[in-house]
Image (cartoon, rainbow, N blue to C red; front, side, top):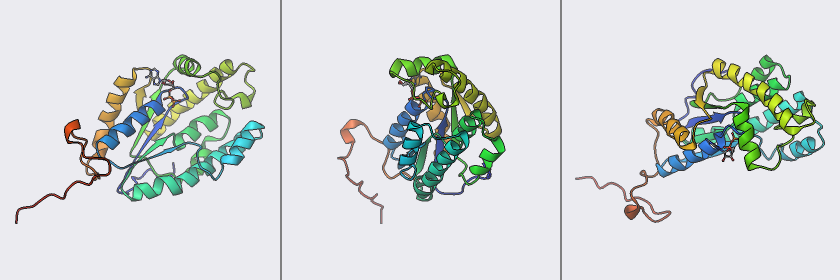
Length: 247
Ligand code: ADP
């Protein structure tokens, strides 16, 4: 990213990265539940979800119309739109923004597709620097086992089938994601991503994730008090009474 400076907004930006099947979405979702229960205002955004490019992406993917460059530009457009609409406003309003994939995904995936590394970094130069960027590092075997265990089919682009590496989706996934993994290694070093061992249990990783997140929450305002034991939880939507101060 062009700017390596802290963003200076009142909110916090936490991003997760990793190859498909690394378990990053599972961890981010658990973190979100935890932060909300602690009384923080949280906003979630994920890769490739902007309405601006949704139909183009769908059509282009279906007909395999994209080249690595046009595919990369579509993702950059998606990101630019979400950056303006879903990342900056909540950061300015003092919320915690949780992002499932960030510019680092483009650096890793698109360079694995053959895009120039410097060109990619320039393209995303506007991206706000996260307060915490976690990289869930897993080996290909672990990722394949998780994905094929939970789903019937690998997605076409996730397996890099557009690159014509192999007609077998699993072989193609292995070749393509190995390249992505190598690029992630580079990116993690260059941008100082915090590396977590994604092969460990869900619980162990969540414990470490919370430990890493805690220091960056210092000074951040909460809307609600942390969730109290069940008996004293206020009804949904109930406001806390203001503190009574002695005259
Ligand atoms: P990603 O977002 O990196 O693609 P997900 O969080 O969607 O990964 O997880 C992919 C699959 O692996 C899911 O079926 C999920 O339940 C499973 N999974 C996630 N974390 C772990 C873990 N630590 N150990 C075993 N399986 C996991």
